[in-house]
Image 1 (spheres, rainbow, N blue to C red):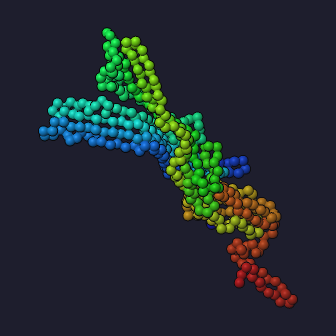
Image 2 (spheres, rainbow, N blue to C red):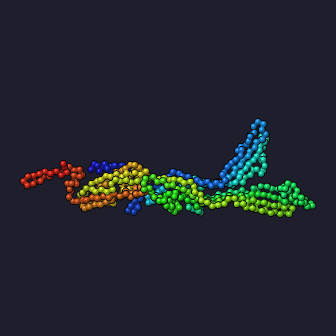
Image 3 (cartoon, rainbow, N blue to C red):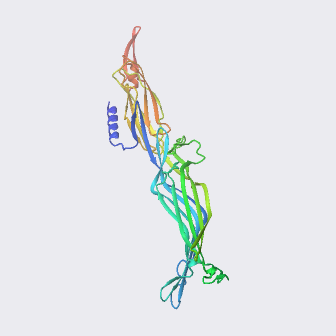
Length: 440
């Protein structure tokens, strides 16, 4: 009885100090142990480069105003055509019915950008007065389109109705303005009385308008092609089969988007005849870049750890026991996995009592369960101990129990329970003999 008392006391203490872990929920006649785990943060990135984004020039004023140097020059050019996107987030696995892997974005962890065109500055500075002047107005211009966007990543998975759009433009950039006479370098030889040179009456204005538009949509998480055992589900999560060997699951995944982009340059020539006050705008649209493509971002891997139940013996036969008496059996439940195992322990027959009824076992550790066979009626008793745990491969582990109960206590039962041997005296013919039951 002392051993039983200490076992009960240990079970009470274990329950008192058991850390909170997975959620254990009753589901009808059974139980479910729900668990979840987050992966480390991952980052997907893709750059689509049409023309490498570069800067070239002096950077700062050269040679610099020092000593007797009268002037300094600044000349810088930035050019390129590229766009890209980044997404940061974590994966979350939930089980046990199936291992469902969701992806949650880091707040503000999504960014997209684009750059197209050329930006140029060319200036000189009077070192004595500090005044800055353009080397030529034709060498100072900005024909670049830029846009940056920050958004919540992974909210776009499979959703074509929620795109990330970027757009920018340059409006009415003046390339040249002057008369026909200015263009030919003087009079064109055509003149009218009073009105004068006709070439001076024809005025030209050359302008550029540019637009760039990028739309990223239809994005989703995809599985590496080698993950043949996994399926893609509902565009919200991935259903993954847990590892049958080993308890750390590594999932190679990639991110992909469908991208539409278009860049146009509109060259507009406006001819004005001043004497008649007539204007003739002639727009010429030049498509620079246009297309649809799939962006496949850099592959990543997310990993999760799982517990794994190990029980050396999954069946036990108790000694014959009278109703009202009891026999007991202790066995170990071991966690050979890499995550804390949480479990609910349930007996399906009141003749078999198990303590404790909940477990929390660290990786590589074990815990003892004690099963008491305390029959109420005579006859053969059969029971099952069910261990519901957060092991995704074996969420329910069963241990079979057998016992027999009779009205007459047997000497053999007492012997194997550890009672003292019983001596019996019997007669044989005219003499007597002494036999030891359970002794040597």
